[in-house]
Length: 73
Image 1 (cartoon, rainbow, N blue to C red):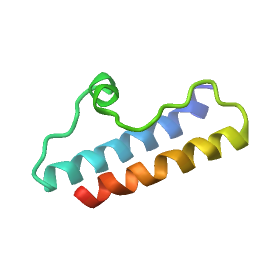
Image 2: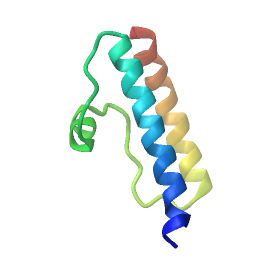
Image 3: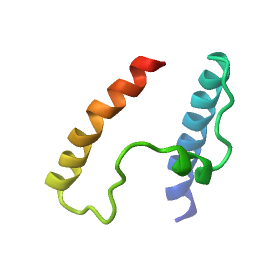
Image 4: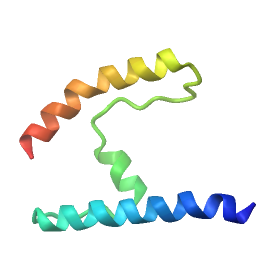
């Protein structure tokens, strides 16, 4: 079972590292903890979403805000 979870975990680590490198390239400091991220998060957070319709609704609600934030960058 360990091997089942190792690949996604390694993939996540690689993606986090790539994002951190991009943040450094842009001249900023990447966040170092998940708590730091949650404190700075400006997008709505979904909890206990098990419906595909609810998940898509949250995505559609978040997308305009995300686009505004990306334009600032």
